Image (cartoon, rainbow, N blue to C red; front, top):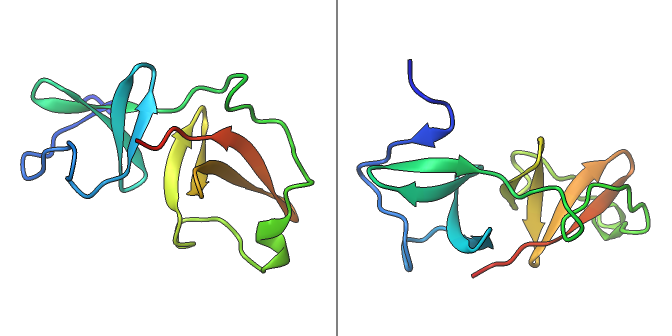
Length: 114
């Protein structure tokens, strides 16, 4: 059985100029790829997620309503890149993590886009 925390993509090498969004994470660079945060590790990519912490909290921030005001709801086909954050998925909007929550969008903090 394969390890669900690793991926092999022999047809693609993540790195500067590879076409995927690079995020700084825990002192290294990871790459967003189809809703996953990949970190090169030998002959495979480890699955990472941004930590829930003081920089990227998960509290409700209902004052962030710009997405709802324009009728935008974040989800798999919303046009924003999915970013694993703790135990859920956020969406990258202008360098910040957005999370759909009821009738508004929570701001889960900045993402360090490289």
